[in-house]
Amino acid sequence: MLQPEEWVRQHVVHYLMETKKYPRSLINVEKQLIVNRLKKRYDIVVYNPDGSIHVLVECKAPNIALSQETFDQVAKYNRQLKASYVMLSNGLEHFYCQMDYTKEKYTFLKEIPDFRR
View 1: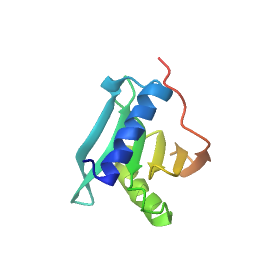
View 2: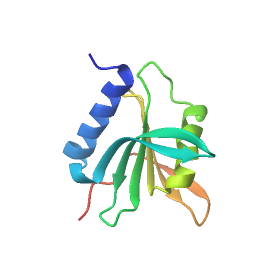
View 3: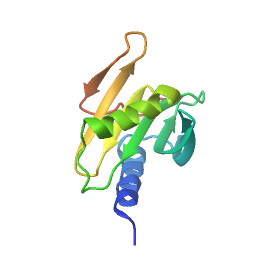
View 4: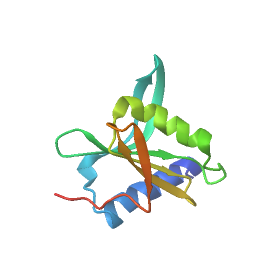
């Protein structure tokens, strides 16, 4: 039986591939990264064909409320990864934002863009 966070992760991967048309070959799940010398794991990363990171996704279990604290966690990971878009989901709520590194801000969106070749 799937753990609640894994259920969310699998549904987000399905959404990225089926609805947003991102190829499976550009999606990477649960890899380790170092943030401030601490080992952390990201849930999902979608790469651009050139190897840069297009979308960083943080998944939470459905019983975890999406809050400023959970958003700060994914933002901290993204300082190192520099994704163009960030998605946060607990399977019930979803937040999407586009990063603007030159202005050091982000803009919330209704959804992330579809895959473009």
